[in-house]
Amino acid sequence: MAMAMATTRLSKPAVVFVSLLSVVALSGFTHGFVTTTPRTLLDRLSESSSYLTTKELWLDQTLDHYSPYDHRQFKQRYYEFLDYFQVPDGPIFLQICGESSCRGISNDYISVLAKKFGAAVVSLEHRYYGKSSPFKSHTTGNLKYLSSKQALFDLAVFRQWYQESLNLKLNKPGAENSWFVFGTSYSGALSAWFHLKFPHLTCGSLASSAVVLAVYNYTEYDKQVGESAGPECKAALQEITELVDRRLESNRTELKKQFGATELEIDGDFLYFLADAAVVAVDLLSHPIVLSLYCFFSTVILMTITLQFQCGNPDVLCTPLVEAKKAGEDLVAAYAKYVKEYFAGTFGVSVESYNQKYLKNTSVSEYNSDRLWWFQVCTEVAYFQVAPSNDSIRSSKVDTKYHLDLCKNLFGEGIYPEVDATNIYYGGTKIAGSKIIFTNGSQDPWRHASKQTSSPDMPSYIITCHNCGHGTDMRGCPQSPLGIGGNAQNCSSPDAVNKVRQKMIEHMDLWLSECRGTDEALPVLLVRNTYLQSVISLLFPFHVVPFKMSDIQPQQLH
Image (cartoon, rainbow, N blue to C red):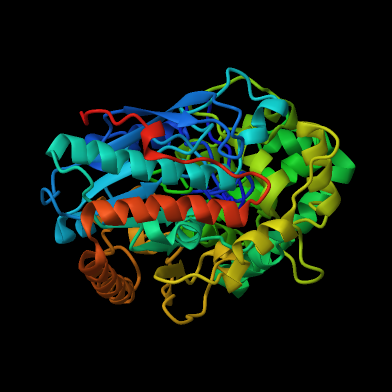
C-alpha cells in the first residue's frame, strides 16, 4: 500500500507506511497512505514502550538482484528482538517494514504472538526508505531499483543471511528455524507475495489489510468512506465538497487561506489534502507503529476526510460536522477548524507534503518518504483515488488526469503505473498461494484491494465493528496512538477482534508444527537454496541470478 492508498503528508521531521495505509498508507501510500509521521505524533510514538527495540543493525544488501554483473551493495537497516526466543529451535517472526522509515520493532500484537510461540522477531527496513537508501539523491534515474520485486529479493537474502548468522552464533551449522512473515497494508501485500514467491523460505504469512490488488482508478475507496461515515456525516462531507468546488472558482486564495494551505497552487493538490484529512479519523494506518500510515496525499479535502475513516476514528470528524450542519453553521468553516486543529495540529500533517513542488525535491531524508511512495504508485500499483461517477464524497476534479499529470510532473515522461503487469505477476485477489492469512477491518477503505474471501489454505477474515480500520488485528482500535500489545479494549467490539486473533493463532500453530515436522537441518537448507535458484530461473528466464550462500558473509549477531 502502497499499496502503500492516500498518502498523508506529515511535518518535516516526521516518520512515515502506507504506510498504506502502516499507513499508508497507502497513507500506507502517499494518497491514502501516510508515509511521513508528524512530529506531534512521533513524539508520542517514540516512547520506549511503543517499541520492542530500536537498536539499529545493518546488512550489506545487493542493489540489483536481477543483474549478474552489477555487484553494487548498500547498507540496509534491520532490528532483532530475542527476549522471548526459545533457543535454539524457536520460530523466527519476520516483520516487514513498509513505505516509511522503520525506527524499530513496534510493540503491537506481534509481541503477544512472539511470547506465545517463543519466537525471535526481526524486521528489515524497505530499500530506499528511512536510512536504507542506496543513493544520496532520489532522482528518477536513481529510483529504478525501487520496486516490490526488488524488495522481495531483499527479504529472501536477509532471511538466508540471518539464518546463517544465527547458526554461527549458536554453533549449529545448517540448522533451520521455522520462519513466519508479518506485514500490514503495503507490507501486508509484501508478506503475502513473499510467501507466494518464496514458499520454501517461510512456514506461512499474515497479510493484515494487505493491498494485493493493484487498481488503476480506485473508486471503492471513496464509496467505503461514505459507508463508514454514515448517512448524516456523508451528506455533510458531500456538501462541503460542493461548497469548496464553488468557492475555488469565486475566491480560491481566500479559501486556501482559510485552511492554511495557500502554498498549494495546484487545485488538485489542495483538494487531495482536504480529502486525506477525513481518512485519518476512519482508518489511521503505515509506519511501524501507525503501521502503514496509509494516508496518501490525495488532495487536501479528500485526504482529510478519508484519513479519519481509515484510521478508526470517525467520530472525531463526523460529530462536529453533523452538529454544525444541524445548527445551520458554515460547514466549510467547521471543516477548516477540524483540518487545522486536528489534521495539521494534533496529527501533525504538513501541508507542504501535498505540494508537487516539494515532491519534486530529490534530496534524501530519513523521515520523508512521500516522493518514494509516489514513485511506486506511479510505476506499479496506482490506487488513483478518483471520484465515483455518482454519489461521491470527493471532488470530481481529483480525476485520472490529475494523477497522471502528477506522475509526469514528478518523474518525467514515460512514467505510468503498470497495473496489469503487477496483477499478472502477483495474481491480485486471485493470488494462487497457500498458508497465507488475510485480515481486514470492516471500516477500512483499503479492504476492497485485499483478498476478502477465503480459499483453500488461504483463510480470510473481516473484523466487523464501528472503529475497525486498517490493521486492527495487529494494532487494535483506533490505529493511533498505538495500543501496547495491540490492545483491542477500545474497539467497539473487542470480541470480534479476539475471535479473528484466535483463528490466526490456530493457523500459525498448525503451519509452524508442519514446518518443524519436515525440517532436516543442513540437507534441507541446501535443497532450499537450490530451489531458490530454480524458482528465479523459471520466473525470470532472461535474468538468471546466481544466488549462493557462499556469496553472503555471515556475521556475528550483536
